[in-house]
Length: 304
Image (cartoon, rainbow, N blue to C red; front, side, top):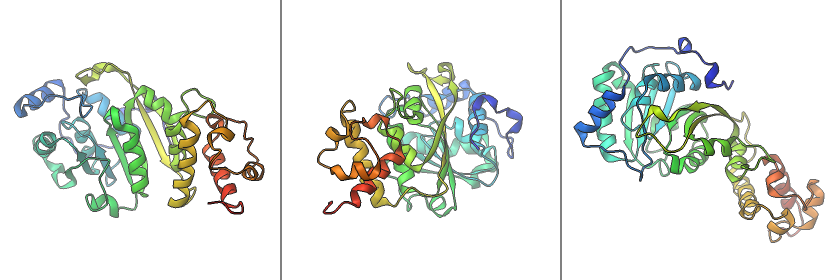
């Protein structure tokens, strides 16, 4: 069950390892030792508040023995909080200096967790099953991450596409991104990310994060998004690609009607057979309605 961060108490976190979490002084010391400066290129804003990472792990409901992926671990604030639960963690880091440093940080602050930790130097947008065998072979796993804000949505959708066993995620993203991911039809920020995420499962907001818990402080607000995958898929990969093409076309010029936006893709009889009014705009359709329209097209004679 999805839970709001504000309703989750710290006493509910299952702590297996009593290692120390990172504070602001630790973060700045480690960065200074390695000559690391947060970069805009990788969207780096490091969490410096132990209470915040505890809350994130609590909201994600991570427990001992869980298989967890973290994308963009940075200097290790959230990494240590995840390991503190006794979970098995694979961290995916794109920045070489950070990837090199992270195992040393775990060894310094939580040495008893070294056997449950692994970091790979990889862009999360290109990571595959061969890169993360423990993740790929697990019955299911959870994504818990402070995602780089400039690529958060592509990372989420890419991982959901590549890993059918990604069952849940709890991610921190820019507030505006969280709003779009969780938006419903009719909302002004409802768009391509909202509909595509709904193909995979149910997302909802899980709390706000203040700017003062980061180093450096971002100039945008942050929020948590919680997600649970559908028990049964909405369709196979071929159908997903077809539906997503409809979604992309419908939102490319969102003020256009479906009839205008999809004029080269959807025959007239498909609207009639699906019960969807062609004068509606794409921003009013649910994911299930896009699926119904696509399937109606497939049933049309001579449809390509």
